[in-house]
Each structure stands twice: as C-alpha cells, then as structure tokens.
Image (tube, rainbow, N blue to C red):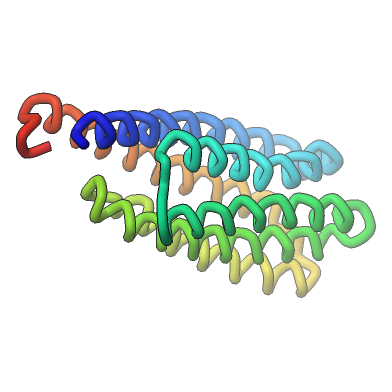
Length: 190
C-alpha cells in the first residue's frame, strides 16, 4: 500500500513539474507570436489541448486510477481530443470560434480538474492548488467562450491562463514533494 502511494505520488509530482515547464514555455510562445505570427499561435492553440490529453493518458497509466477519478480522466482525454479537432477545423476560417471552443474545453477541463483535485485530496492530501486551478480554468473558460463568440481573439489572455496554470502545477508539485518526504521519513504515518 505504501509503495503504491509513493509510486503514484512520485509520478504525479513529476507530471506536475513537467506540466509547469511546458505551460510556461507555451505561454511564452503564445505571447511572443500572437500578434506577429498568428499562424504559429494558431498551431499552439491546437497543441495545448493535445498536450493535456498526453498528460492525462500518462496520469491514467502511472497512477492506476479507479472509479470516479478514472472516469473523469477518460472524459478529459476525450474532451481534449475533440477540442483539438474543433480548433483545427475552425482556426483558419473562424478564429474567434476556435477561441470559444478552447474556452469550452478550459471550462470542462477545469471542472474535471476540480473533481480530480477533490478526489486526490483524500488520497494524497493537499491538492488545494489543483482545486484552485480547476476553479480558475472554469472561470477563464467562460470568459474565452463569451469573448470568442463576441469576436474577440484572446491570444494574450491565453498566455496568462497558461502562466497561472504553471504556477498552480508548481505549487502542487512542491506540496506533493513535501508529502513524499514526510512519508519517507515516517512510513507508518505516510
């Protein structure tokens, strides 16, 4: 049981740190290309949900999730795949609609992240950063949907969205590292 906790917690911690780096790099790329190279920014818009799908699939495999946690992750992977296709089909003809699609994904993925954070809180403790991240993602998703449907291109706002996500993942990774250290120091209570 303890080995399963340590293995799952380590995998999750590593995933959080990798996601931190990716999101920071993605945000920098979006912010630097949004105005000058909109085609590059468009590709980045498709890449983001696909990256989330890859992370979700890794999490499913590494954490050996069951029940509601597994179901929410599977739904998240399917949602991210569908959104990447939707963005791909609309990005050149209706770029504002692709922003709205991204927003719908951010809303749905945020809600699912909130559920996962609440479930994992029982398993690993903490997870408040992931819970806040889920709440922030749902709020940003609503703003992106409304803005996109209103014709606003939110590329710079999306960079900010990813930066906040990176901060939340970093905090969650640090907190999980502390929990792992405590479990190793006191295997009976960990």
